[in-house]
Length: 328
Image 1 (cartoon, helix red, strand yellow):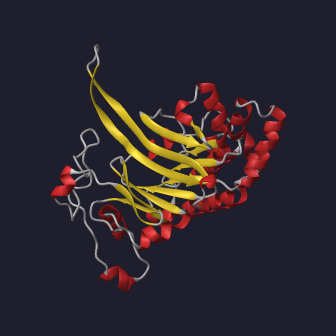
Image 2 (cartoon, one colour):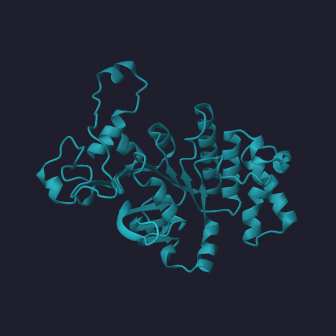
Image 3 (spheres, rainbow, N blue to C red):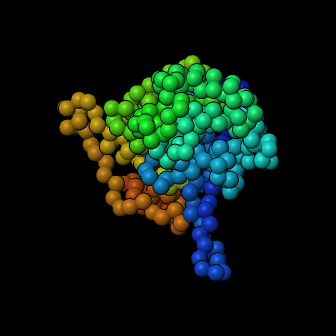
């Protein structure tokens, strides 16, 4: 995983700000929402990078900015050696064949006026890769691939359960044979009994097609199960990134330690004796983030340096990066 030739996606100093406008007739910009602020990471071919953090920390915006669904304010998104930020719409359209997304809400992400056959086959026709007959044949293959009956192709989304709809979304994302799939909390809207089925399906497809995933989620147990490496976000920053087992066994950032202390352990004695870290206060506003370290207002080990200096995002051990003055 260390070879530069193996890097599928390289994100460098990615920034995404949303302007805040005031006024009814004559609108004036009065500030910015700092959704994603100067983050960098790589995704290798065939691996899963888990992205975790509290609601509103910028996880979904990161995924959308990578796919250029929302244009970054600044930074580079280099996919297979090409900076997507600099591409014109026609060039970007060609690159989009290799990058797809599975959306969070399986109810809102499927067009209710289209059959699932039309939904899954639409990318092939839009990109001119198949005629109607070829598209229908490919839909049959894709439905079987995600565990659905091909006879369902003429049914509409409302005739399916949430888990089945998410499988349809997975089939649609596979239709163009991508190299990278951004999974934007693909299991959070599903029943617990269905979540494992969808995650197992994603793992099977990854092994079969050598897919790379950016897996965005809240569920740390599921992230630990599926991820190769894990990045932890807080208020627009990546505060820690490490191989999965390293992060869960030796978390270095106080925020990561607090998150992991809330994950249940299937051992009654260990669960009873371990120390819980309860963070005080609320997450600051991304409109006016704190100076220095953004986590300092809730950090149990914060000192004066944290208020005055932005912590350097540095490599502590091989592949283990952290943004904290006191980690090491």
